[in-house]
Image: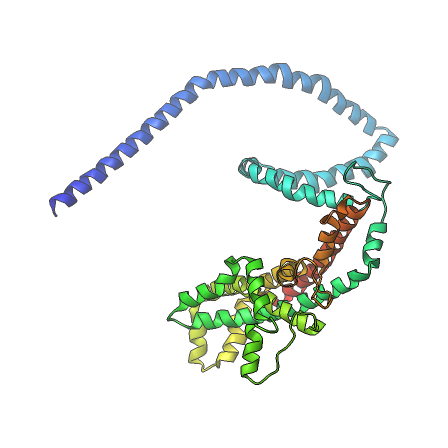
Length: 404
């Protein structure tokens, strides 16, 4: 063994000795402190027991207990104890106090201490706005300037539904949800499987597909807006090369179908990055033995994908579907990126979503008008109810289809 290795070995041994010596002296110090503080602790504990606990038990608890025992010996007291007080006490002890005792233990309070900063921020910026918006939705003629309102009402919800553009916004949102979510999930799963099957330049392609996730939405929207331009757009130029006439995608002469197609292409492309990342991570966690066994049996690739890959990826698919469903219902920035703050084409085709209604009542000075802020809160609650219903349906369906 060389001289340097010997010196390095002695140095490590010396560090280990110092560490154990520090630890030994720490425990000796801790034991001495406990011995010195044992008598004061016992004295304080005895004081509280002698002058607080025992008198409280003797002059308050015992008289109440004895009085209740005498009360239960009467006919009325026995009846109340047998059929009301005892069942209620059993219920609270069995289903309230015992579960709470298991939750609110020492570990729970330690966790609360660590989570307290995050909980404070969540209460201020998340829970309070949610509760405030729920209450605000039922105010009548609420004005945010002087905080005055004329009682509570359900007319805000009726006014929202009766607005002429609400049905169109609901239709646009439904089209975005029920078309973009399935297509994006299928495409992202297909791309993830392709990426998982290649070996060379795998990281390079993963980086390319992940770029939209870290790029600004408005910037990508401007690029797409230029790509679908009627005169100078890359899409129409590609169609001319193929011998197809140029299409009015988003200008004044564009139809509703073409305008919605442009928006759907942008939404689907922009949502692929995160889904591909999640599916790629899920594919890498699947045990290779399943695929090896299928290859030995001569199973086709499509059958392997359908019988092995999809069932084992079903938790990821359920997670992606639910989150994509919620995100599609909240579509706003993608519409603004292509069609501007009005959410319409130059020809007047309305592509606004439900979230547009929430912002229309809050922004642009409309919130200062009596009742407008409450109508915006009502619109947000309607959107919340729709998302909740579809999420519960998706969770119910996933219980039978997801294999953990």
